[in-house]
Image (cartoon, rainbow over all chains, first blue to last red; front, side):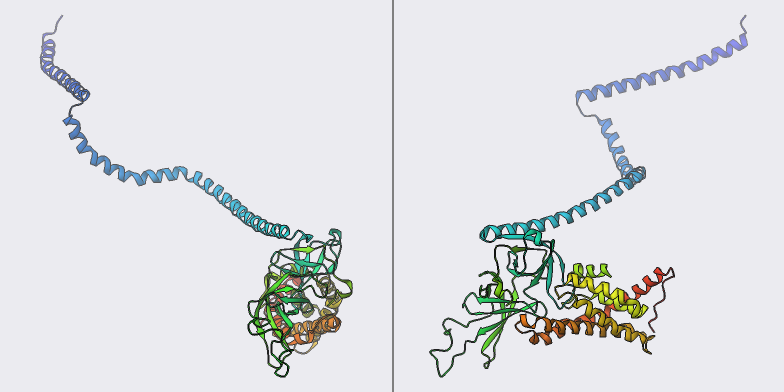
Length: 311
Length: 167
């Protein structure tokens, strides 16, 4: 049985709802049509005004939002990777320390390599000299004495009085040789004296050690002429120049038999001369930096004359 | 003391001031003498001297002799009425350095005169360029060395480090 009242209400409600539903359906169809049209329009490649308008409105907003979010993103990213960064940082620090150490070692190796190359070049240049390379392991503990200790001794064929040199020039001579090490008296020791010659003028003299790691060349014949016997006095004329001048190169003369000839000793820095002196004296700068020596060479095939071993 | 001598020989050339390197063995010995007296320092003096002799080009025994004589001077300083004066360590090391270097020079001249062309001519330059700078350097270094030796002595006895009085 139908209830007319309630049925009537339902029919009225349905009648009211029908235009609503129809409208909604129409709206959906219109929208779908619009989307379809938009799709077709987009596919044809022609201008799409809707999209243009849309993008013109949205783009600045997007841009602003993106800019605003960038620091936040960064913070989030940082926070996320903080522990990882710390680990990486520690690893990099360790790597840095390792590389620094490696650089130091490589520099040392480079210096050693250069020194050895220099020694090798020197050895090749003077094949007649039998040279034994040695490391400097110590210096004399007293400032009054100028000695070196090297890591070669009688076991390596080192003997007392053998000359010691570097590629730059003369260093000294072996004063004491033990089995595995030797002491070298430097040319700057006050007890050292070496027969020398000025390369330019061939004037001879004796190079002696002086206080403060200096050298003095003494007993250089004076250039002054005797007014009474001009022909017999003085070996050097004005044209030939003075026997010794600043800048002159000083070499071993070989006299006395303690050192071989023509080893570089140093360069004249200044000349002292008084009119009354028979001899001149010159301050000589050693060719070798004797304070910073790390390696030297012992000349093994030169035997000093025993009778004149000590000048 | 043996280690100090090795350090002096190996690193001394790198520690040069005014062209001279400090006499570390002498410094430590004098500080020791001021603390323990001459009698308690003879063995230290002997060990230090022998080590220096082994590492030096000087005739063997010369360093020991000079070091012992210099420490005797320091021993005299420790015994006198000024033994508590703040300047005693500095005065003692200055005197001891002068004695040590002076004796070394004298003996070297006596022992090597025959082999040297003119060592007497070097007295002046050696005094100005080596001995006096050494006196200065050793005196300046006495402050840390004296303090270190006092601390070491206290540590050896198991005590806390004694305070260092300047006045």
